[in-house]
Amino acid sequence: MARLEGRTALVTGAASGFGAGIAAAFAREGAAVLVADLDAAGAEAVAAELSRSGLSAEPFATDITERASLDAAVAFCESRFGGLDILVANAGIGQRPSPFAETEADTLRRQFEINSLGAFQICQAALPALRRSVERGLKIGMGASILINVSGIALVPRPQLYGYGMAKAAAAYLMKALAAELAPEKIRVNGLFPAIGDTPMLAEFAGGARTEEAAAAFAGALPLGRLITPDDIGQAALFLSSESEAGALTGCALPVDGGRCL
Image (cartoon, rainbow, N blue to C red):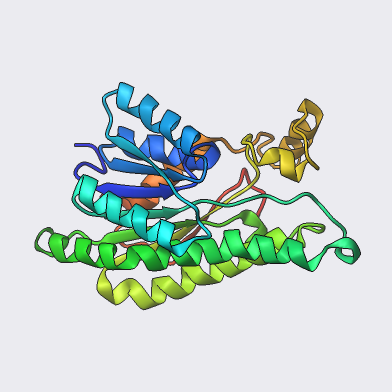
């Protein structure tokens, strides 16, 4: 039996990169997946590709900064799939490196708006639906799951990424605090802490453009010597979201980072 058979999931930022990898991994393991992203065309493309493979996926245009948009995504997920069992708060943005003395306050505001407040808002919007999922699953011992895609930078800081790092540290706090608060309700909350991957976000961290030289330099900085892939993140997300494999895990900070946080 597939690990997520009969489960429903909402993944934000799922039109590309790590989010697309998570959506694909979930769908392949039997979940019905709402592919949510600000990039409507990208979300449609990811959902269409999964559907062509006989998997269950629907696109939804969602703005992580707008609470009404997030409420609409949750409502659509419940109406289309019959519930919401797994939330993945993955949507985020990168940052071009900037020395501390040159970092503008607006950079921090934008980073917090998306990388921490965005995660906060989708978790809050999804909570009533997740509670309903728990009520339905109590007879068979199934809870619900929240997974927040944080960043290894929240565990081991890097210079010149103050907005991104501070916002991700706030997201890590959110994950831990929610895990403690929601555990009695059988809602598990865990976090992925990836290193940089070969995704569209790499260009921002490289200063605005992805080059082979930049990609090689980032890969070389990781002990395993390679960039993290969407499939790496998808498999880790699948593990943490599986009741059969990770049903006893909550508040877990899982580095998927090629050894960066050693």
